[in-house]
Length: 250
Image (tube, rainbow, N blue to C red; front, side, top):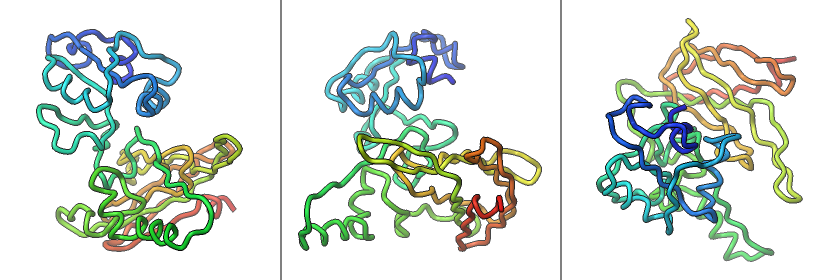
């Protein structure tokens, strides 16, 4: 992966990753930033940052990349509203937008509260409703696809696929979460359409809704036993199809 090579210090010139003959200047947020930790875990894996310049505060990365020839940086999508002189790079064919639940470099944001308070509970309910989500989705991916923010269909109404794959255990402190395993969507001839991470973060227990053009697709899901589970789904225009891998294995 070109991104891993750049931030792990294995690529020093853009021509090494298909670009022009220009030195690469990678910028990363400070060590205390959650963005830095999420990026390292998701992109670098067992590697560590090398040859990168730390930038503080996070938002300053946008300016550094804009004025530095060959500059590239990591930054939360929330900081890009109104940013000039930079462009966003898609990862794995996924564009970072407020309606894309499959962006592979993402983390959940929590809204914790204490005790029972009607005013607080009303606020939380409002944030999860359409009005609140319209506010959230000015800068962040929402908790659900809000109809008024859903991208308009290009040539035909699309359908939605939700696959409840097997889950795995993720621990954060004393709390256990059960996020879903990823899966692939392919055409009937085997051509890959999309890889779905099926969660925003390791503490996200909701399967990711995916918009697809009407038609028949092959789904290849990972299972807790280790082997893949293959099955066909038919997407109808305007409809939602939900499949549960556990039921298909019976």
